[in-house]
Length: 287
Image 1: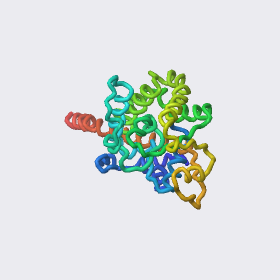
Image 2 (image 1 turned 45 degrees about the vertical axis):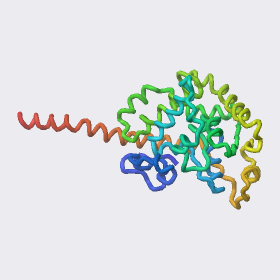
Image 3 (image 1 turned 30 degrees about the horizontal axis):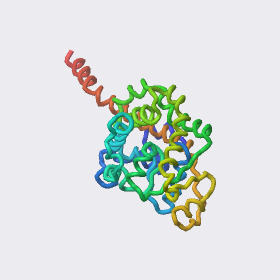
């Protein structure tokens, strides 16, 4: 359900907040010290793993604490743009700062660091979910790449964004995912490189675990609970396997973010313009 104009003017309903709790967090709180490939059914997998008792992160969770974006960006710089490749990305001490509060992770940006995370957590198991490449590309393009088609709009919006959603998170997508993982300078090149990087991602995961097949489950969406529960040694839950329409969820989330940014921008503009308004009023009064 899309947010209404009424919510833009008078605040978001409890229903909207419950559907997107990660967007309505006090961003002044830094949760980092509290130890606390995208578009392949990652939201459904997150829900499934949570039902099985594994606290699980998702790319959406970055909205809970945009300050984490700085550490993710540092990781991208180290992996993709630093020729010496400092080894700290292969240690649990590094990743515990971002992921120490969860037992599993899905989606961006964590899946950009698959080999590093597997080395940092050598006992961790990997569930590899691969979609038909054309079906994946269609949803990935709509959800992620299209957002980079208008960089000027992002540049204009960033100074007005008091939430940090644009100014802190955009570099993770732009610098980290687009330029780093997909080796692309713009959205046109990103589209051109996407399928090749997708194939390489899956080949890389399989290569990393070729000598440890017991750590890898190749899971096909729609296979239900049994393969996952057998792989993880968990009893099969007495609830249906979650099926989340991730595209619809993502589209609604973007509209909510748009409303939040618009409200923040209006408030920022009011603060900036208030001295001018007061000065004009005083000048007119003194005439």
